[in-house]
Amino acid sequence: MITSLNGTPLSRLTFGTMQFGGNADAAASQAKFDAARTAGITHFDTAYVYNGGASETLLGEMIKEERESLIIATKAAYDGGSSRENILTGFDISQQRLGLDVVDILYLHRFDDDTPLQETFDALATLKHAGKIRHIAVSNFAAWQVVKAQRVALGFDVMIEMVQPMHSLVKRQAEVEIFPMCVDQGLEIVPYSPLGGGLLTGKYAGGGTGRLTEDHRYAARYNVDWMRDAAVKLTALAGDLGTSPATLAVAWAMAHPARPRPIVSARSVDQLGPSLAALDFDMTPELYEQITGFSVTPPPATDRIEEA
Image (tube, rainbow, N blue to C red):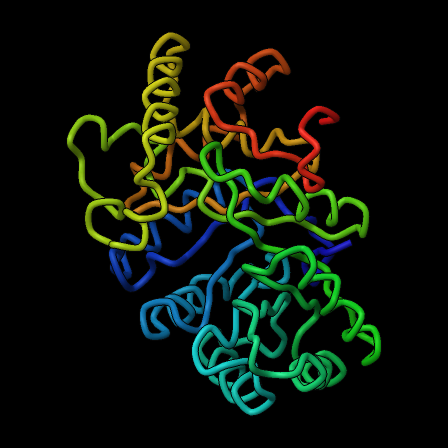
């Protein structure tokens, strides 16, 4: 079980600090951190590459008074590969920015085809056995990559304990193999982008701007007709229920039987509110199925649709 240094458990939602020091200055970042803490969030996620290190630096300042009660995760090796040198050098910088003697969770930010996993996990094991990190995790890995990496990790007397895939109403591939693998292997699931890059807030249907209009990667990821239709249906349902589509989207993501702990974030504290409201939303089984029906369910891993 992953807890804070004083035994505080992981919260049902995770707060992502990718906006800290980027679209959110120090004051706006602090306001969002405070709102997350008021809502009971104990798990905060950052990365070496976020805003040139500003995210880690700002988060490090905010957590000082409550360090023992919080679970802090950062990520390594998004750029430069997963070599031993790149991981150790990058982590040393992350640790300094965060101002921590020990980081609770260190993710490999993505799979590296060009570096042997033995070298990668030798570095991670070095950090773990030296007491510099408490838990090892992976992000953006396929299920087979997690299992392959886990076998290597065990050879160094360490193990992967958490996985961070993409998952939302309009991105459900993780449900096919990653979620079942995590449940079977006892791994925590901390999915990112439960709002589908902002698509599921409904703002784009009204002509709003954001990642989908400003970042070509997000535009390519979500520029699919059925995804936009799902967002329209979710927004209409939210109106009928007197809530926000963002609240519905996050509550739906939380309600998956695998018990994921989605990462929520926002550009401002006002935008964050509807996502945090998902913590108190009553997502009934009937409503969950109704919302699921707005989406395209991916086929089972065997592709034997008739047996699904």
